[in-house]
Image 1 (spheres, rainbow, N blue to C red):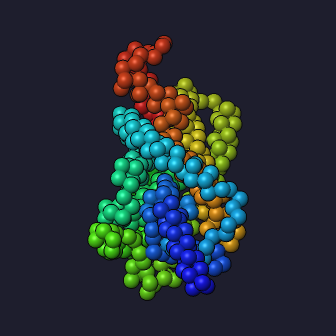
Image 2 (cartoon, rainbow, N blue to C red; image 1 turned 60 degrees about the vertical axis):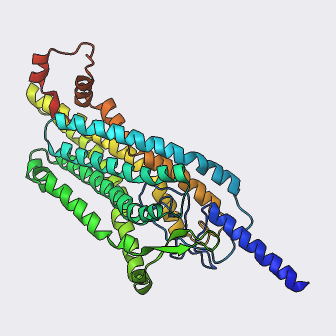
Image 3 (spheres, rainbow, N blue to C red; image 1 turned 30 degrees about the vertical axis):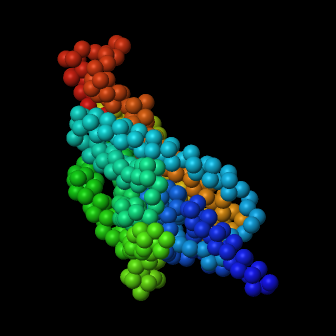
Length: 414
């Protein structure tokens, strides 16, 4: 009797673990609650930060994920049903936001190309291009899963490794770099208006952008090398199924690759986001000080117009950067809290479904951040609106004639 009871218990445990696998929740967690890395299984957690996707269930930036070594606690602060109900609505919403990002950032590029070729516009075009590529990388796996629901296909697993852990990750961090560079550029323009053109950020924006892209791309080559796609045969159906597991490179260099992962988060996420916020605060302070100084100096009409254009450009970009950084903070904060308190917050803790709920809600904000630039530029930049109206052939009320409009040189505002 005891032998039969033990078999029944083992069967129930096996069913329970399979149920977790179907729901996309299987994490490799040690007995003390730490996430271990990484034989990956399909999950449904998508992160627009690029490190998490429908193959990898992780925190905001990157958490290595695999199988459960210990059963999760029974008492949850938020029920699994609520967490999964929220997650069920988030994927279609993300698809809508990705599509919106593709459209609005394409408009941004078109409008900036019609304006002057200033250093500011170069950075803004680069941000829009990276946002389009990021939205495309994010949407393809999600659409594939929504259509096929096949987590064990070769395409899905390859996309998970190379698109999820490299393409999306690199593109998102390139955007972080470019937003940071724009903040520096605006601070230079406001704080040192007479010497601004002497700085390399102003003189050679294309070279700076290329260096940022190459540095980010080369630094993160290690990320997909930690995993490999393996093929196995299902004994019941004889069908070939694919999964993602640890690579031999990772198994032999675990400490080094984990250290590089931590360094990449510090350098390309936390430093850039916090530094961007600080720089924007400094830009606002410098702009206020510069405005007070200018009021005390007698200037010509042309000088006043140029100063107003620069101020409008700075206010527009600072507002756009603030919105981007604000929307990117929740998903990064969720990762920071998990990394600092893995025994209390995260997998295999009573707060696991709180972590999962915050993660999924944060992905919406992060996806939304890819589309906010157009709204900020349209609301705050007269030049941007004027160029947009020209494209769509809408005549503004009280708009000047073509000759007058050309003479006022609206294209000087980014």
